[in-house]
Length: 319
Image 1 (spheres, one colour):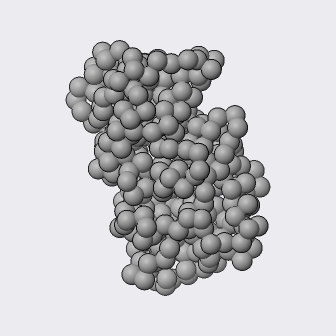
Image 2: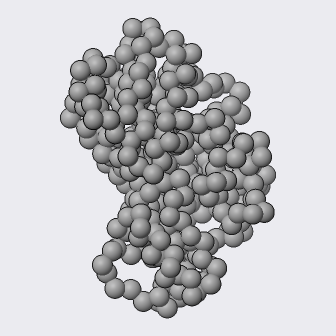
Image 3: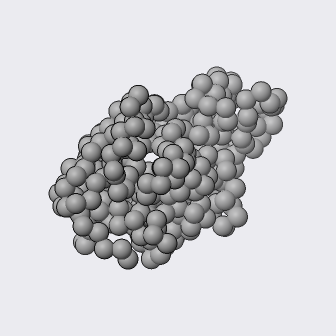
């Protein structure tokens, strides 16, 4: 392990960007800046990749490391990681390849299945290809979720309850990207499992997403309700399902090649946990799931976890 001097290390926290999650990213970035300063990092500066001066600010700032707090396109898909690799600046989280894999829910499913992780029956569509709605419905039924294959924070997702609404939902999803994923709705308890660490992975306490009477799923509005109203920790599921979900979250992290941090979402059905997706840069806002999981551990604090992400980034760059 490379010993770092926190007080003298220059850290660029990347937040904002051009995705639909820009404002959420700023909230994550602010929390990270505060956490790093609390952890003893003396020189922490937030940079917005959407700024016209971003590249000059980044390359001219003599930064030792970048903490990526970008969500959605440009942040979680490997693009900013490519820029940082080119500039020779170490960065937190996953590399280009694993970021791109995790960001594409269709490709992620392929990797999950190879790793033996249960997935929902589904169909993927690419813009311009022909498709048969009846054939799709025979696979996913008329209760299904339609979502952009590459996007985040529930943008563009529709819960379809009637067959006649499927085409409109597909059109909405295509408004957010060139590939759409349609999956059968799995009945059960929605949970999320954070993963933390390097060679020795650790699954964090599982969060149960409490159902809201006025919401069909964990949509964008529900995600930013106060955690004490929407998160239940520990999740009220069987001991066997709890253990299995933590095991599968670590398996998903490894299958995608994630580094340092990830958070995987599941539905716990009667047959056990079924994975939905993996986030390589989970939200770090006051109401986000990952920080809430950290708060419910006995030995971790948010500032020290953020500091450890930087340590892992530096160690990886030195290998």
